[in-house]
Length: 467
Image (cartoon, rainbow, N blue to C red; front, side, top):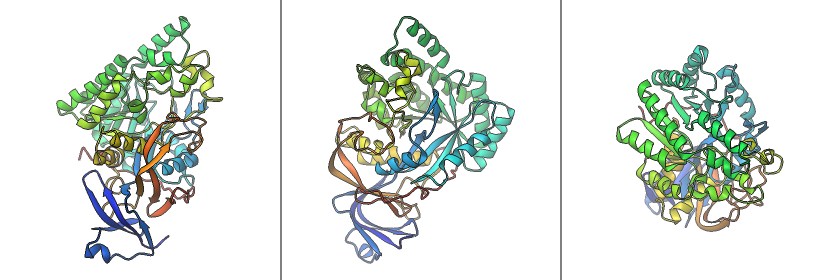
């Protein structure tokens, strides 16, 4: 371990404050903050000093929705826990919450143990797990209680993907009732998968096989309908609800209505829905397959409503749903049949920079950037103030961010283990310069100085918006 580290002269930005302050780090935690130039700050001493003059000093990002090594559509997500967490660090993210998967016919424990085995000793940054519940039965429901007790406090269910992850309304209701009792949080993939499968079958029968039809059959109304249904089931169960990867304005409206009714309902969106659209899905020569994810990209007019939802707090979190598949050999599995294209986009490295661009563009404020990318996901999933802020006692997960540096996003320069970038050629203002994870530098002035195994598993308390 390094001794004390002092970060001098930067603008410290949290969800609640902006202050020119010096930050003292000791034993992997924030020891003290003091306004730059004050006697208190001048009294700080340390073995190592980082000059952050002209830079932002921000909490490390918390990406609460990633899928490393996820089995899907006959293949696997191309990032391992090692490559994916290294890329996350390059992008200023210091904590991920990934999804352990229960397979039908197996226990939650088997799935969780398998994901622990994948991640342990391989991560560059800290990590936690949500649990995908694919098989609701009496044993599964009992296991949910045990998982909450040991720090896996959120459970994902799918209204989509019949035959794979799908749960029917009865199974969803039972799991919600259980989470109402044990303090867990149900995360919902809200799309009407039964209806979508009919539309997929009909589109293919008409010879509509190109990637753009993936977006056309997964209709915004079927996202909104499922969102509404999930909200009402949660209301019947007396349970909180977190809707993942919201992409359609009609679904945002359902969330806003529920929140206006005072229901404990939360919503997440992702950078791809804020910056990409069906125009990308329609790119020729099968290039559109690079943008196939579920929920799908929507027409551009949806973007304004998503940004509005982030400003009004009808959407609280921006995560990535990072689930990369290479164009060559993986996305190509769906040539001639869009339904066979593996669903997912790479993005764990791009989120903090894209959201800073949103600050530059006037969509959100600096503090809101930190709120939706760091503080709220940490609170939502029981890790605050250990993660998500810069305050005495917090883990020293700190990013020195250069708000003036310019970069062009490209697969040639990114660190994700995937052969394309969803944002290829996009010019961004702002870039990560140095990243500390529990006080240890994992990125040092644009060089990787971390290592696999530094990242540790982080058990979580229950959602801190419900206490």
